[in-house]
Length: 275
Image (cartoon, rainbow, N blue to C red):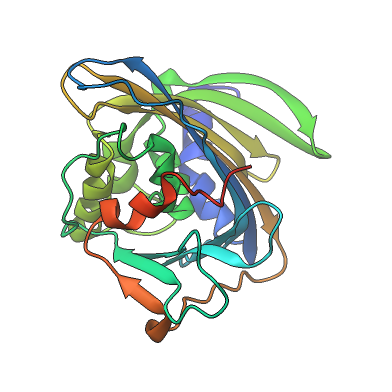
């Protein structure tokens, strides 16, 4: 598709902006994790069952919603810097079935312990627009291009790459991130033990028009000294001609909490989003 790494790097950096031209985007995403080094963790986290969702995203505003497998009703909604998650055992008559928090630098969290909160529950905090904008941090010198192949009827080219998350949000092409917004993203990453100064490996699939169709990234988490958890995020993106409709829950149906721990704790043992 591209004859040199510089051209491939430019295409990857521009891919989020290219996708923003679509009316809507159908999204599928899965999060899973594996402990590689225990380090100073006081105990070994249990196996992470992973989390999978499908949904839609407005590629210009970043608003998105997920449904759990086998359902069509929203289970997670990202609107602005807020996330809304339907409580795992919410009943039809519950007055306030939604939990919410603000994904900003004022989150009242220290780094989450993966023995208490499985790493894959980052799916409720790392919104798809942020994952998409990671492409602007693809390091040109790290890119290895594979042959094009046809996937789901669409010709796509895979690029193996390393991501610099610090560079990604400084140089995002889909939208401009203010320093406050970068600080907000950094805080969310920090809560999961992900440092923007490290490099993360992954792969990106682009179609013939430069739209990103799949983003696979292995994020390095170090929640305590000398520990290493690999959080694997697999994001599938399909541009659509139909606008993405994302509606936040009504305020009177929401319980707002000040920390990600409080938002995520109910999903530790009762995760309705499991495949």
